[in-house]
Length: 104
Image 1 (cartoon, helix red, strand yellow):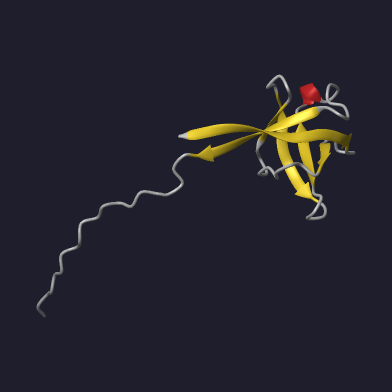
Image 2: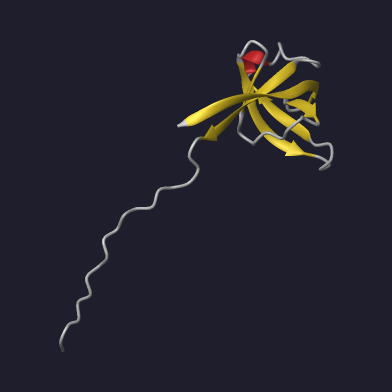
């Protein structure tokens, strides 16, 4: 079972040559491949890359084609962080194998 959390990602700084939205220094780094939404919870795209200096990283968002014209600088974006409720795996119960000593 997965729980979803919405976290503030930040405002769009600018658009790259490839059309990606670039954000600077988010409060918490998202995972690559996480879903990105706007204030109205509409799916905008996914986190494509995290790059730059460690202290002030940049986040690249691959924006859907339908949102290319609508996303401008200063647009607030949010990330949906999905977490598993049970991270640990259950161990299989295996019966011990019988010891067969063959006579030769």
